[in-house]
Every structure is written in structure tokens, then in C-alpha cells.
Length: 616
Image (cartoon, rainbow, N blue to C red; front, side, top):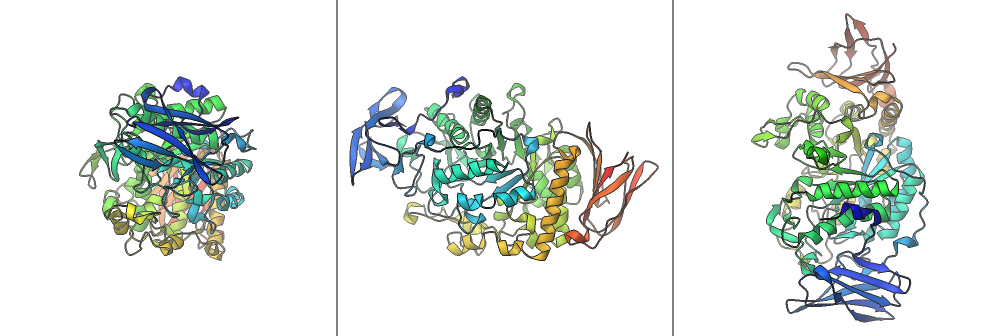
């Protein structure tokens, strides 16, 4: 187990570390008979023996070697001689199969000493795929757009995984060098520059990481030790060995990785992918260990660092504290919210959406966090989830679009390609006026219509098994995931953002985000909220939010043609925002809210969100 008490002194010990007189190398190879480190200098390889220590950890100190030098390990394992990159490489400048490079993290001069991070309630997340966000496809390309994102009103960017992956095109979940920022994006220096630049303009950085599996090509961890087990099976293949023999070092490999991003790259949070497929039957789950260690390190550094999980299980245990038997994550993605919104706006009923018919699921997810909280699911053919009403609103991240829900569609369609403009505006309001923590997907703020496909490439295609490309090919329909054209089509289009209708939609997003920032009732976890409507025969939902200080808000969401909305909401109300306003591309519907006998009455235009503020 990782000793959390030791986190106060934590630095990365595995891998290569530059020293005053050379470099120190440390690698776990429990089954090796012998091992060497080879350093490339003056046109040739210099070979030094690694010395075996406790628990199969080999070390060596090589004089006269400095940061910037390339190196690799020579392993003698079961009678074979293998040449391998470092499993804890900080940089893979030649790709997943090439040599590693020594990096001195202390060489970068940070400018964010006054930055202290963001809590969950402060977050408005903007999810980015680094390669598809700009023509440059680099960390610096993202940095160039930070000012525009700040002006939009988001508070943090969330990067899809950046660990070194095969080739130059990938979603990132096929990464195989978890410590090496992708070389085609700009490597470790590029990522440091991006985080520093984000903090300079007041934006946080959350990094998506995958601890449930590695990709197929370039995964050399099995040559070093028992990192994987066949006792568990993920949807993508074998699982990490978190609970079997020799698993202590495997757990350390993952916990150290989480701490590494916080310590050496100053990230403000981690999003843990596929927590439901991170298998561990130990008394203490590795996900809890990661969260505890990250929080401890953040406290030691004087920064708030959050850990958010993505899980399909609707399991509130993930965000309950360890003292209550939970894992202690700061928040979890709410897939239910997305499904309820998407089904209500598009009318889709296939696949998972069979469980989200009508308006009732939307009302329930607004009220109870999860739709499936222990009730029977037709899609799963069983009861699904558990109740979460005891948890505050800032423990849930909600969205109408993200990389998964767009990219896993057969044609990669974004919402702007599936619904008319009035429903697109309504989707924005449902997310940004909800009591939860919102997340936007790159380009949604101006109605991006370019598809976001699954895409990948290989360094050595022959290294990948014949069946490895079948799931993405089926997922992508007719789009070849390995074609450069598929990747090019998935890039966001700045030309689209300049169109008049796109500018009007952006204006709505800016207004919604400004209201969210200025109104205490919309700060997640701050207000008591009540949901009205959503019952059988009704096609509207209303949300009443009352904070301990500041004015109350009343939001009405009409998910049908024009109709009368009547909700038991007391008070006098003034209109703050209508998604049907002409300034946002609507028909000009900005109706007042009248109160009669304790009932609020609104003549709502079709497919419109209306926000009112209490004037009493």
C-alpha cells in the first residue's frame, strides 16, 4: 500500500532523475536476472549495470549524464535480452517504441506561485482534445485560445488523456507511457507552458487519466513485472494487477502517477476514466488510495486539487468519504443527466435511451441526482444504481455533450447536427442552470457541427493484433478510425464560430455563464432546490432555487410547443433570461411570470428555457 503519511515528502523516485553530477536510474524488474541502463552520448551507447535491491528494484547512478540525454534499459528476463524504454519515462520523443529522455522538472521556471486551485463549486469545465482543438494540434495551440475561453466564462479546461500513445492521432485512452506527455502535442515542456498560461489568466486545468487499462501497441510493462492480471477482465482487455501477488508496486505505479501530475505539472484536478472497470478486491480500493494521496499532496502544497470519477454504475459510494465507507472522490460524472436531456431533446429511444422516455427522467435527475438509483433498468435488464440524495450538488458533473457521448455515436454527430437551434439553446440552459457542476465539450458553445469520430494511428501497425481495430471500426460506421481524414474531420472549425447564428449562440452561453457566476443560487451546493413538473402528461420542468443569502431563482424549461406552465412557486418574479430572445436567435418570446394564489404562471414559447429572479 502507498503510505499516505509519506506523501508530505513525495517526489518521483522511479525512472530517471537528473542529479548534480549525473543521473540516477531506478526501475522495478522483479523477475529480471540482470539489467543495464544504456545512455546515448557522443554518437554511441554507454552501458552501465543496474544493481538489484529490495523487492526487485534495480538502481544505478551514472556520472557525467545530464537532462536531455536519451536512454533505454537492457533486460535479461527468462533467458531473453530485451531493449525497452523506461516504464516511468518522463518523455518519449521518438514515440512509444523509442528511447526515453531524461527530464529535469526543476528546470522549468513556474509563474503561478499565487495560484491556489479551484473547488468543485467553482468549476465550469470545458473539455478539450488537444489534437483536435486547433490546427496546430498542440499544447501551445490550446494556450492560444485560453483568453477566448476565459471571456466565454468557463473556469477550467479539462484535457482528454495526454500520456504518450502510438502514432500522432488518438483519443488518449490508448496511452502506454503514463508519465510522458504526448510528444506530438509538445511533450513535457509544452504541457508545463499550457498549465502555466492557464493559471496566468485564471483558468484551472483538469487532466483526464486512464487507470483501468493501457493501449495495445507499445505496452512494455509486462516485460518489467506483473503489472497485469487475467483474474479480471476489462472491456478493453486484461486489467491492472491491483490485488494479486506483487501488486504493491503496481499500485505505487498508479498512485505515483497521480501525484506526479499534481507535483510536476501543477494540474488542479484529475478525471479518472472508467472507474467502474478499475478492478480491485483489496480491502482498500486503489481509487480511494489515489484520491487520499492526491488530497494530501494538495494540502501539503497549499493548493486545492480535485479528483473526479467517471463511472457507469451510478454508485454514490465513489464520492462518499472513507469515514462513511466511500472512496472520497470529489465528484462523479452524471451519465443519467446527459441521457435524460439527450432523449428529451432528440426523441431517441434506441440503446441506453430506452430508459429515458418522456420528461420524468429529466425531472428526476434534476431532483435526485441519478435517474437509476436502485430501480429497474430496461437497458441493463436489472436494478441499477443506488440513491444519492444525501450528497450535495457539487458532487455531480453534468453535460449535454462530451467526447464519449458524441464520439461513440456511429457517425460522431454533435447535438447541433441532431436538433434545431431552439433545442440547442434549451440544452445549454438545462446544463448551465442546473444545480450541478457543468461541463461543456469543445465547440458546443457556438454550435459546432463537425463530427467527433473515434480516431487512432499506429507507429508499428504490425504490433497490433488483428482484432484490435474491430470495435472502433464498428463504432465509427463508415469512417475509418485510422484514416488521417477522419481525424481532420473531427477538428473544431473556427469558420463555423464566425457565422451570425453561431455568434448569437455564443452570446447565450456567455450570458448563462455570467448569470451562473453572479447568482449565489446557481453555485453548486449553495441552494436548496425544488423540482416541479415532469409528471405524466406534462412536458415541462421547473426548478426553484433558494440560497441562504441572495435572491431566489425560478427556471422553467418547456420541452414541447408553446404551452402554459403553472408551478407552486410563491413570490414576485422578474425575467432575467429567455433562450427565445431575438439576441440569441429566437423568435422574441420573453414572457413575464405572474403569481396567483401561490402559483407561478408562464406562457412559455416552444422549446424554451426561462429564468426569473425573485424581486421580494
